[in-house]
Image 1: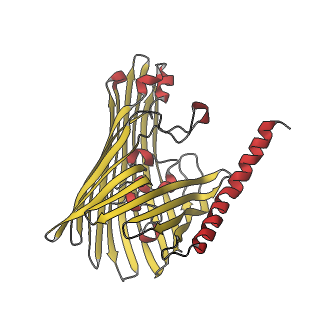
Image 2 (image 1 turned 60 degrees about the vertical axis):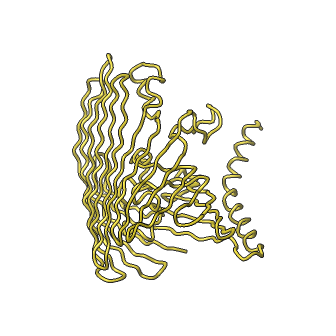
Image 3 (image 1 turned 45 degrees about the horizontal axis):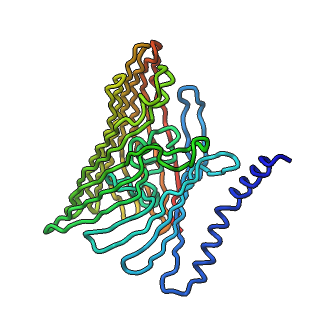
Length: 391
């Protein structure tokens, strides 16, 4: 047999046993430790049933799904130092069937001096607006389908990586008391989005540029009221493929400056809850007159009928504008996705939450690609139910 055949079999074997072996060894190690703070292993998952009405060329469909599962490992070394690891699995994850995805979402070491200063080192979800850091905490969120910028199970069809910073490696954060208010801050640093995923071009998982992601959030909390502003800056090569369309050097579309600006506002009392966010992503380059904008907004108004039963209505809007000019033609695209949705969540117990949600989606797209025009105006409905379990 050829050596490559043995390598392929070995790779499949390692994939099959790798994670279970790691988890087993971690459990054994955790149980074998005699110190006062063993490794804590916990997590949660959300199973859902979604019914999508027909839209575009896709028929009506019903689908059960393990929408998301998160598995956590936490170790507290002392009063100041702790470590945390988060594995996330989406959409009935199966590597053998090529379903969904499995990701190492977080692996960081934390130093806590006091409420004013905390430091995380390692792979982490950065603080951006109100929801980004807790977007995968499905048991504490009322939604079956989260606002689109944060719905990781839709990351194959929604540009979540563009709308929000999904990873950083250094973050300092905390808050300062100011009479009855608290002044929040967070500053983080990470890779640019230009991370290699092709082994033919060298080591994967490595940033291929000399640029960084920098960002942060500053906010104010006053009792149940919270408001904040967030921002990031990096350089993105997402439009490099346009060079092939227009027959230009790929360097013409690499490392385009990208700016994100976000704002969040929330209020909650014993009966009512209101949460809203806005995200604006801007990319511009004078070369070939590239102008790309991606905006997102969501607002949710909720009502606590009882301590366990929560009703809500929410509206989301994603607006995309893209224009590239060249002597050979132009690429223009205007796309809007609006979602009106309502639902409820019911806390069955401290560890089990039941959810239901109905959404009406309108999708409008007007494009012009090298003289050819494409227009779509479609709407569809999604009815869903889910159960979130904390273990």
